[in-house]
Amino acid sequence: MVSKQVRCPHCENIFNVSGNPGEIKHIFCPTCKIKGKISFKNIEEKNDYAISVKNLKKIYGEIIAVNNISFNVNKGEVFAFLGPNGAGKTTTVEMIESIRKPTNGYISLLGEDIRTSFNDIKEKIGVLPQEFHSFERLTVRETLEYFSKLFQKKVDINDLIKAMNLDDEMNKLYKDLSGGLKQRLGVAVSLVNDPDIIFLDEPTTGLDPKARREVWEVIANLRNKGKTIFLTTHYMEEAEYLADHIAIIHKGKIIAEGTLEDLIRKYWKGSILHLKNCNNPKTINILKEKGYDSFKEENGDLAINIEYKDKILEILSILRYECIDYDSIEIRRPNLEEIFLHLTGAKLSGTAS
Image (cartoon, rainbow, N blue to C red; front, side, top):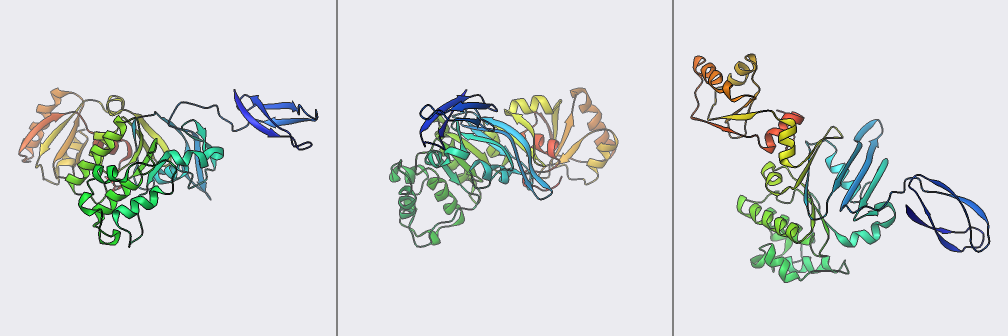
């Protein structure tokens, strides 16, 4: 049951009417008794999710960019939304952030329909866009102070500067910051209003490994404080380290969703035989002819999907017969990169496998 405020067209009396989502209800004004109808079409009951997406679709001409997707994000979790380039990921995020209008579907943030309540909701969300930009002649401190003034609720700027390890840069002009520092400042800006939901689009792009880890710890601490993080990233280890829940979008559809353990259990049979420094270019084709699925990792190592461990000796015999060298072997469970590659045929950066 949901409630809707109605203004009588005859006497302009304002009153509330309750009904069920999808219902068309006959009503009458309690003041002038005029009769009418009210539709509860496209009205959804409030929910307790941080983010709820139902039957979301976006069409550009004849292109279906997002194809009837649904998912929920629980409060206080890190939700990683992953997909190859062109999968519909950015379009989906922009619709949730109310930047782009859906062709069809329903989105709620903190239980509120964004079509009718976004002006109230926006005080409770923080956004880091894929490319953060600020005023070139503002210092780091001035940038944070400026964005802080856009919101009623705000956090202590000094705490933000310390949390993002920007103490030494707080008096530097934005134009003089490195790409990594600009990105770190962007993360800080997304937190100036102490938001309940934080959208982080590629939050560690351009950061060195040490700075990236520092941002990860900031995100983990925010989750521990009950904040909801909606994360998009091209770093699989980032999603694997941070995410409580993962959704993978491909060609406009959600093709997998769950915890990392859920995805491994559902979409991967067996283990990975990992061959370090196996650089012979013929290896993948040789194994394919023998019925084994294998792929090169970015560091040049070879990963082979083995459903049963008793196949290991057979694989090693094949490699020995073909005079294929490697330094060492390891048997392990698949990681998120391998699950993603298996499901989409692409690496997270969008490079075809």
